[in-house]
Length: 361
Image (tube, rainbow, N blue to C red):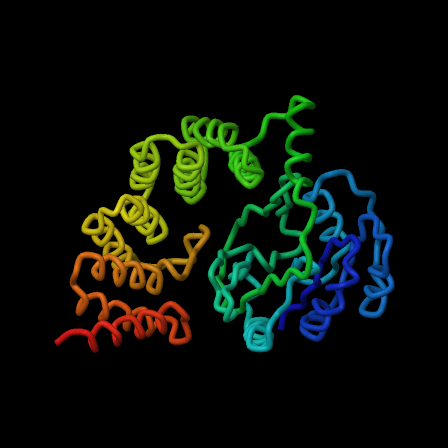
């Protein structure tokens, strides 16, 4: 059985660190905690789980801090977590099963990262991340923000997921500050960092600047296909926020098809464009197309699971209801229920259709 070092970077995480470590400490063989300047009880909590608590001066570079944590690891593989991550019980079992059977020839284990949830706890946003990385195999973290490791060698897709459970908002301006400091210092952002810089501008509602960054990113044509697709979708969102003509947003969404086959997320956004203009036949076409798209999380892009079933069904229900085809609308509502039986929208629609039926002679 392979051995695993859990490698973490932390700062002022007293509210979540114990929860994280309790979910994973019994699964790993070593824990390395790199503290970047905590002033609360973070180091005290970490010391209850490991003797390897190291101080590392923060210098606005997440990759540097993660590389420091990996450099302290002595086991076969390094695993990273953020302090507000946890392994749920079912994922702990899957993790242990993988650890017991993992081929030492594997260089990187990719695993789902669940970061968005609805009111019932269903996952609404997920993507694969490099989670176990073979130690001393020459792979390093890059990127001062949104840092990543470029996998090399044999890659395995694991069944266990890591769940991101925030308890409080983080500094919303930190990432943008880091990017802008780099640009002020004359640093040229590589394609992945350019894409994420655009996202930070978008999150800060700086629509014109974000649109400019995304368009330049796409024009340079050096990005990864999934980032290209997301950049097109974010361009569409910027056009909408800026009040540009509908055709601008649609053109940006259609541009995603130049990179790969349609994603359900894109089809749902195109459907919404027509829905908002009350063009329900056109909207229904795109929502129906979303239902034909195959979900493939292993492509590595951001995935909105609802777009592969529940959301297009609910929207098709509304489209056909407004087109006067109540029977077809009700059929799609029940199909939506097969994805989310406890959906308040499904139950509301059932009440609506029942009342409609009672009025019909």
